[in-house]
Amino acid sequence: MATDSKLITRICDPKSITFPGSLNASDLPKISSQGTEDALKLAAHHLVELEDVVAFPTETVYGLGANALSPNAVSRIFSTKGRPQDNPLIVHVSSLPMLRDILPKDYTISPVYQALISKFWPGPLSVLFPANADVIPKSVTAGHATVAIRMPSHPVARAVIAFSGKPIAAPSANTSGKPSPTRAEHVVQDTGSTGKLSLLLDGGPCAVGVESTVVDGLDPDGNLRILRPGGVTVEDLEKVVDSLNYQNGRRPKVLVHRRDYEDKVIEIAPTTPGMKYRHYSPSVPVIMLLTISKDPTGKASLSFADAIKGVSESLKTKGDSLLKLGLLATSDSPLWEKHPIEGVDIEKFVLGKSSDPATSAARLFDGLLTLERRGVQAILLQGNQFMFINELNLRYISEQYFRLAGLFEPVINGIPVLPIYDVNSNSIIWGTAFSRVPDNNSPEVAVCPQMAISTSLERFNHSFISTYQVKFSLEFLIPESSYFNNYTTRLLN
Image 1 (cartoon, helix red, strand yellow):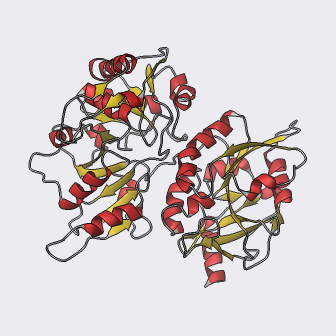
Image 2 (image 1 turned 90 degrees about the horizontal axis):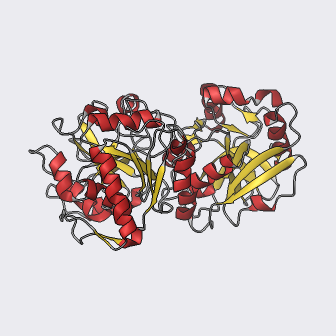
Image 3 (image 1 turned 60 degrees about the vertical axis):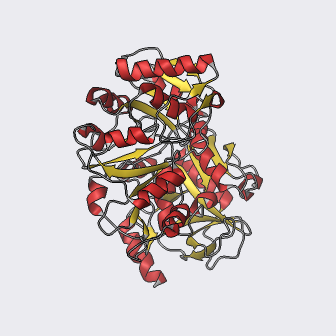
């Protein structure tokens, strides 16, 4: 293991890497760039011979890889990231023969799994398989009888695995709890600065920008359960499942964790990453806003300018004369048009067009990390793109995107209560938002009038937020989420 070593960065050209057309082929890819081939061979040497960790790009985020068959190598993932030992790892393969080599010999891949692999591999879909305890160390599975496996589509990631000749366990290449890196410079500024990482392959920015979707089809009921939402959507999975012919006439359902079912056991002892621990959180508060242009039901609570002034006074430390806020929003967001506010400097990061939510998702981690690096004291995030991307159900969507901000939101009957920016009145309201039509920019809004809202600056306390991880907006703070749920449920029922 490299201890307090200098980080080596090697450039890899993804376009120079060509794989055989069939996933059943175990042949090495053809490399047209000598520099890229040398970098891949160096990475393979670190992974196999030195049993070291290597950071490399995937289509989702940058990964921190180690030989998945070596307990010693896997242990270095946990020590480099500061990752809890009970948080399992996803194993990455470069071909179907490599997949079959690590599965139990008596296991037969189901028709549903075969269809999913055919459609989404290589790509951002992780599939839960029975673990072969003779091959996969317990440190990879956190002691479970299952292991999540995927085949990355990024040429550099897949080539690293192929050149190593070993399956690679690889979580995101960030310190545990921090936003996932989507560019090489993010890795350099995080785990690359600790002295615990010796090699980074720079293959450019990640195209997807969020983690892989994790599915479990092992239950005897035959249904496909989504354990973690990600780069493959619910709708895409449903299309594949619905397209198959079933001899017994019973079509499996696609069930989303916390939307369609609850499983307290896997929440306590998760079988896949992203289900238990706080994820994706920068070191500064993240405040999510929805923007609406329709007239909502209910009254606005506070003007946008007054709210910004409120959070300004709350976050300033003694001697500060200027609050520095970050703003993450789409290029056509009405938030860009607000008049300058005295004493507040706003750093801006454009997510993309409102008509292209996939690009916004891919740029989200980059935006959080970039604004944090610029020294902002809090980040305002326009949430429209994320609340309605892929699936018009807030309970499912909030599970993924509130975790991006490291927050836990108060809910009413399973629907998050959010701060909502009303474009017409230039004000902030508390409410729930939902949509029955695929219109990302015009959610229907039901306002919870004046409920449990405190405009007292004394109630907005940054240390309190960090300790209890409750949902907050501007200077509004709901300190008792259980009370909040009961109170607002009575209001709306």
